[in-house]
Image (cartoon, rainbow, N blue to C red; front, side, top):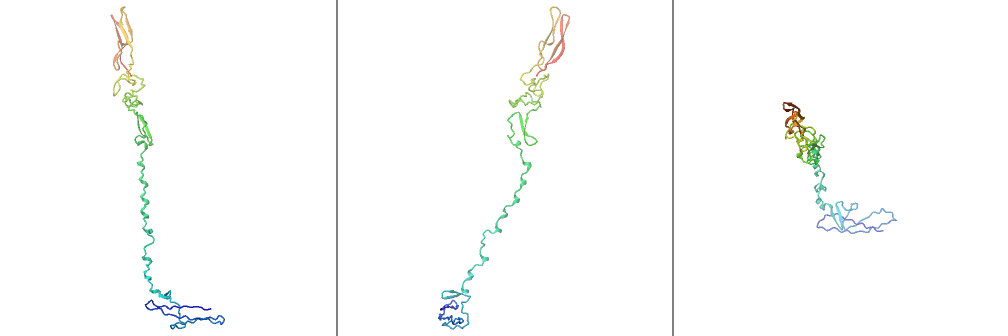
Length: 257
């Protein structure tokens, strides 16, 4: 069996051409037990024992060995000169742009809470005779318009009002009492607010001398009853004096409602 060994000597990459080598055949006698040392014959003189393996500084390119130091290794850019692969490094992220302290829960002030009853129209009960507002709990409250405290609203507010004089607590619908003095504020005697002045004492009396020489008598106001607030004699007696009769009694001021 024949083995072919090719040895290239490292030479500089110059204008020189590479030396040629003649390869000698090497016979290997397996039966002889020889050490199998190989001899090389070249056209140049290469001493036995000299390392003829390619130099570590050379690369085998076809028949030409180029020294590694002739390669332009300096064209490689150092790692620290390369731009960062992370175009958004962590330290450049504006992670602090969200500032939790900018949320201020104290901007809600309890005192600025506006109760619903203070919102215009929210507590309007549709009744013109009530004043709508807030109670102590912030809820709606409707109060009857009643200046004089007789639990009746003035007629001036519309159909809901029945009080003919909200300045006098004696003047109100359903009043049963009679009064001899006019109402305060507006005057008049319509205390029951029914639109008319009702006289308390309408009783008419008489006291006269008849043709038989006697007094004819009936208690009451003689001839006509006084008007509201007027004062007149209310005859309670009739006395014969000579040929005449004279009424006696008390002066009464007419009361009305």
